[in-house]
Length: 304
Image 1 (tube, one colour):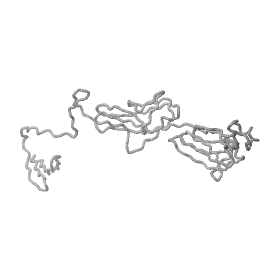
Image 2 (image 1 turned 90 degrees about the horizontal axis):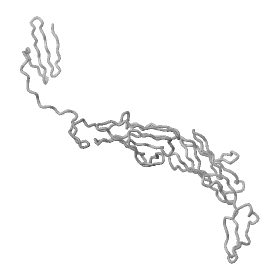
Image 3 (image 1 turned 180 degrees about the vertical axis):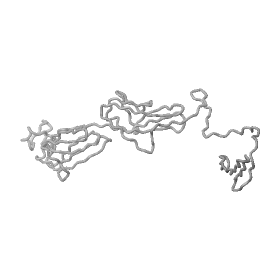
Image 4 (image 1 turned 135 degrees about the vertical axis):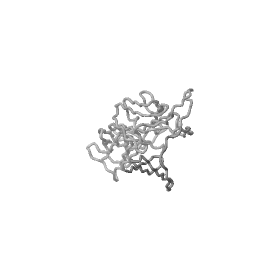
């Protein structure tokens, strides 16, 4: 009966004869074959060799003035992949949010939070550029908190680690109007402007007080200008102003959170051309004086 044996550190082909209790082995090395012969008794223990070089080296260093020979591990952040873009964290204005940076390493890393665009972080009545700690807590969140946040972990062992969080704050539209009463002269162009804040981004449009939707054309032109991620400036130009254009106009913004309307009143103006007597400080020969009780004077003429 023959038994085949495979030795791990080298390859032997062995044949055992059970009746004679004899083991003949052939060693295969470098493609050749040589006779190994039967195995004798074990020899004396040998001398230990030179220690090898480990895969990870540990060094004796000084941490906070104290010598240490612990294994130093650079910082890392659990469950974070730098190859994937951050998924947005969606909250509604007025809610609370907590962001956690699960940083690990030896020694324990310190963590600092910043906004990636360098803007300040509102914290109650205070504003700060950076915040320390593994957890960032924001209470009563508002639209100014929106943006990308970067947590940076560092323990002095390179390279440092960082993770990005995308915070989205949802809120209904808010419309700001600096001039609700707008006057125009016949034949001129009247301009109505409003500033809209909303997130998600709102749909903005203009209409008359009777609900007539205004469309781009020879009479009306619209212009939008983005100011930030959630702020846009919109403008309505009414060309060749005439009496039929007098009335109320609505600036309307709508998103998933709600709808908001801003109201303008457009009125007509008359330019009075007058002759001014400088010695008596009186105006005479004013054209259009019959309408003076209805319209304001926005210009004067010259002295003859």
